[in-house]
Length: 443
Image (cartoon, rainbow, N blue to C red; front, side):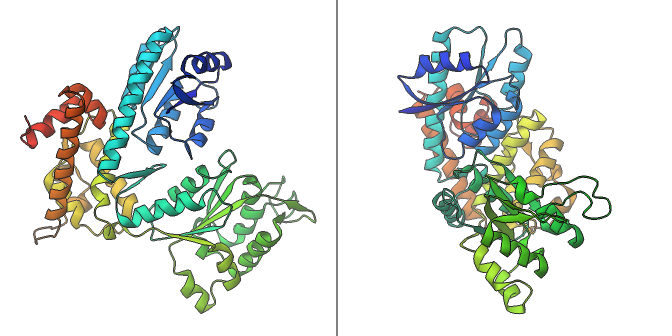
């Protein structure tokens, strides 16, 4: 049975929509944007009905989060009477269609069924090209498939997880995916970057303090550990923690209690711990910089995210993913990158990894004045790289183009050569589809 997620803070409207679709969809309800995002952690619908005006998080903000999690989920916005401008804005942010209140239930059924069919086709095409999207993490390489499989397998447990990999590969995004696919997804996700906190403040940030515990402590304050109660605590750059604090973290993991600075009271806290580092903690243990007993506590499950240069097949997918994201942000309709730019991307070392690629695309989309990103649109430090020596990327580029042609052909066949519907299924504009048909001499 197809799946429908209804997101509206009006109980009566949700009830009426459930009644209209209960015999043809498996339905879940959310009374706000945050609850909807939590549901997407382990339940992906075929279509989402989303109210535009809600109290906890408005529809556009929720829509942006949904599209970051999975850009292929069709979203139908529900808007108030006389708010056509808002509906148009929602379409620019990636909504497939919109319905105005007061609505005709038969039209709602028509729009939702059409959207669900489009969503099913998009998923089939994603499976065809081997692409996986786990809460915004995109990849098709064997290495990333292993990352996704490990997240799927261990997120529902309460085991401690250590995420390793160089800066910029998406360790915090992986931690969020673990949280939203866990049984704690309704609880808080609290992240703290230990490398960004001075050593003398790290303990109070983690465990909190009581009023008067030190000069300037005018009020009591809960630490990050307490704030994460019933949820997930993400300790980024755990390798930067000094040994004194390592001992206190180990004690917390053993007792699950917190003692604030200046307090004699222990507080029981229930958290799931996810840590990350770009350091070789095994070597740190060997040199005595990191406690061995803490390492084994943290490393119950290890997820290693490799650098981007070791998974070139993910670059075209990530490029299109980020173009789609920044098209929505900057209200652009950019179709892709030139062959020269893709050759350049496949030859770069990407020392900043996915984060560097993301910011490169963000800059290029903002600057680009045409339908295709060219070398002139890239940041200077990227565009000046000399790629004149022959690269080994031509085989991969050809494979990507063949895959794109296969997807276009499949979409056209499934729609009886209706280009407008095919473009909608592919998640691109009609103009983009026409450009690609001309590029590949497909009529």
